[in-house]
Amino acid sequence: MLAIIATSAVVVSVLVLAWQAREQAKQTALANDLAREEALRHAMRSIDAVLAMIVEHPRLHPFFREGATAPENDPVLRGQVEDVAELMAEALQTAIRANDKVPDGPDKDDLEAYAREVFACSPTVDALLVAHPDFWPRLTAVHRGERPTTHAALTWPERAMKHAAIPFRRRLGDARPKAEQEATDSTPAAPPVAP
View: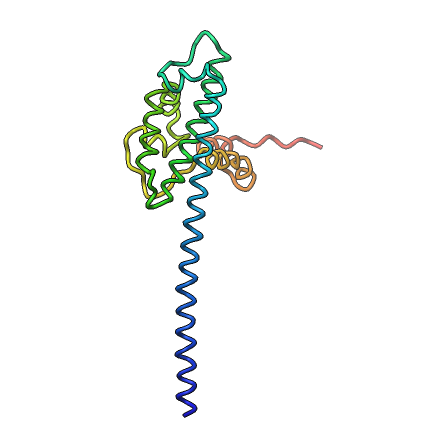
């Protein structure tokens, strides 16, 4: 009789644990979905901020919506157009990467289509991607019409941090090119100085 009660208690506790695990899995999935949506909303706000800049400065409009090229004879305006083009490329890259993380994102094709429209309407953004494809790898893939890869490439800030760490890595170990190491190591030592 005592064995039946003990066995029943174990079965009930296992069933309760199974129910709790299922509920925890539901909560985790919901939290992940909300986090993905928030990341996508944040990324879309970046695009909105760039568009707000273009609206606030109407002289930029032709360079991003009408296909005008950045003026050669006005270095200030050219610099502004190039700066806003970089901001637009970064915002698009961020939004597309955030959207890639949402498996059933409703806007995946729409966002890529919007990016292609920006390339078509802004020769400056188009030229940036051609000149610096490694700065915005996911956006460059859209520009080239490629499908995304399964692994995420480094973003521009990640690459910048990686390259910024090079001096620190050199302190920890010799990171010079092999030819440079051999040239330095094969240099004869200076003759000893007499006391």
